[in-house]
Each structure stands twice: as structure tokens, then as C-alpha cells.
Image (tube, rainbow, N blue to C red; front, side, top):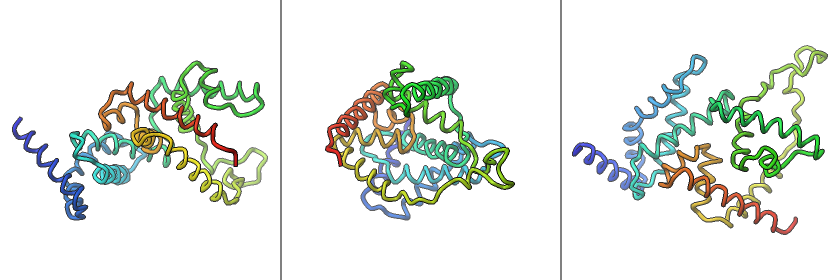
Length: 254
């Protein structure tokens, strides 16, 4: 028990010094110290078709991010903060590189229901339904609808090497149908709009949305990081999304 207390105090002092000095050597020392944690999480997610070296590299990147962002003044053990951060990096790797995220069965079933609802509402409305319309049609929350849409996207990705069709010329793939139009201007305008809207919510709400939609963490993982229950995280997400929607609707048209 005394050993654990001494180790916790040592950890707190090291991270406090890093926050004050941003010493690269101390940062490297902390990376080496917690690298076994990253390797352990990488081994947990290893599969026959996945290189262990690649997974360790991804987990190590998550570890470095956790070290850079950790706030020792919150009184939370570093491992409690680092684990969801590293797992978020690994999950994003599977989603972005291999499209093989392990989605829970209940979320798989919800994704199928939402996909069917998209088809039904598209035919009925003659346009793509909004998240609000989807959630109302299926009888779930908007957050659950968003999660289901994310899961469906991960499970139904199609390789760009797939042939366009039986009648297509030899070697003609879906990649050949992609245009080269520059959309950077639209993305810049979207980023400016998002930045403006994000100023209408609190810093805590912005952090929760960042962890959920940028870091791809679950509500339970976010709750561990900010020190609240999963139910409170869910409430924070609903409230902040509602406020963002209201701000967007009341914003003057361009």
C-alpha cells in the first residue's frame, strides 16, 4: 500500500514538472516508463491479419498524446487517463486503415435498423433524412442514431479496388470514378462555421464533444477522464448538441 502511494506521488511530481518545463528528456523518460502499458493494450487487440509492430506504433502514439495532454492537478491516476486515450487511437486505426472495428452486437442491430430507416425515409421524403428525423422514426435518441450511423459506416465500407460492375472495362474500379474537384474551400468555410458555433458552448462541453467525436471515446471512457458518470456525459453531449443546433438555426444566412 505504501509502495503504491509512493509511486502515485512520484508520478504526480514527474507530470507536474513536465507541465511546468515541457522538458523533452523528461517526456522521453515518461514514454519509456509507460510503454509496457501501450504494448499490453496493443497485444489485446492483435489479430492474425494485423502487424504487431503497427499496433504497438499506434498504441505508442496514443501514449504520447496522453502524456502531452495529462493534467496531474485533476487528481486522476495517469493510467486511468492513458488507457482510453490509447484505446481510442487503436480503434481509430482499425476504422480508418482496415475498416474492421469490433462493434458490439446491440449496436450492430441498431445500425441495421437505422439503415433501413434511412431507406424508408429517403423514399418518403425524397431526400436524405436528418439525424433528428432518423431518431424519431426509429424511436431512439439522436446520439444513439449517430452512433449507429458510425457503426454502419465502419461495417459497410467498400474497397476502392472493387470493379465498377460486370459490364465495366477490364481493370476499371470504383477509384476510377472519383473526381479531382478541389473541396478545400468548402472545408475551410465549414471549419470557420464550426469554430464560431463552438464558442456558444462551455469549455467543458467542448472538451466532451472533442473526446467523443474527435478522439472516438465511449461515454464511459469520457466519464473516467473528466470525473463524472456515464449518464452525466450523455446529458452533457445532448445538451451541447442541442445548443449547437439552436445556434446554427438562429445564425444569419450567408
